[in-house]
Image (cartoon, rainbow, N blue to C red; front, side, top):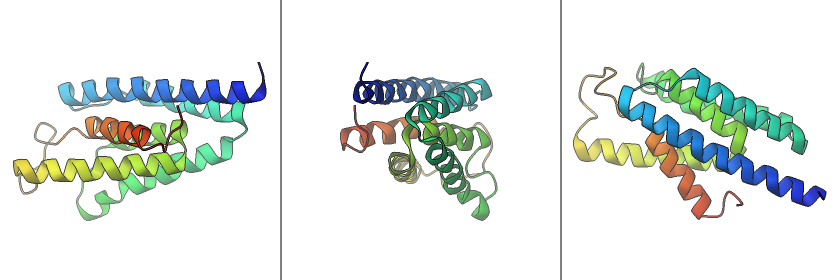
Length: 154
């Protein structure tokens, strides 16, 4: 297989892995308000393995760290604003997508979640696990929007 074809196949596999991971995470998050560690860890290692094959391991590690940092920022203003499962999930997305697509995905997901929370009046309610909005479905929507807008090559 030529180098270009291998890189294209790796990108396609990363896209598929991201889509499947976010669909599973959305299901777990909506049903139980939890995202299992086995899912985020497996996806993160898969993304780092793909990055290693492509010679971009340092870039992927940077994407993981930066995306987790960006997602953790709301917790500085309100404790528990973003759950630890969501932060780990975003780290896995960073490993799989790289920094540009991941930041776009986070921004689109955050905007959609904020608009939804305002529309149903959830911003002022007390926060517990069962009243919290599941963030994974919004990440899935942001990922699909990034794909549609050409920020992620298929």
